[in-house]
Length: 111
Image 1 (cartoon, rainbow, N blue to C red):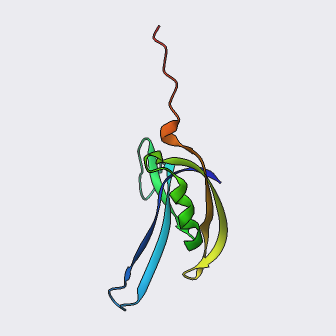
Image 2 (cartoon, rainbow, N blue to C red):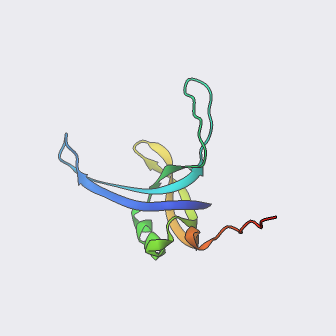
Image 3 (cartoon, rainbow, N blue to C red):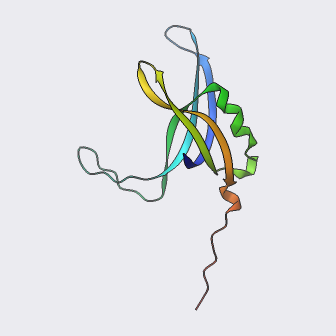
């Protein structure tokens, strides 16, 4: 799945209630803001971030993006996995297509 990726991260800590260690891995994807009308109204312009679960073995693949190359156009490999009792789409791999910073828009010609 080709998409614009804002970043990937691992968050580790200890749960307040149980004291058990935890780790959450996420990839943040840039997506057009989706207007909605109903019980909740959404009006906006531009891009928003959507988070996807990230497999631990895939985190290192995001290190190939240069520090100044974020956001980046990437191909994400995904699969369905059981997570917290539900099937979730999980990113299991990533490959860089191009840093978006390297893609410059065409300059408009003045008339």
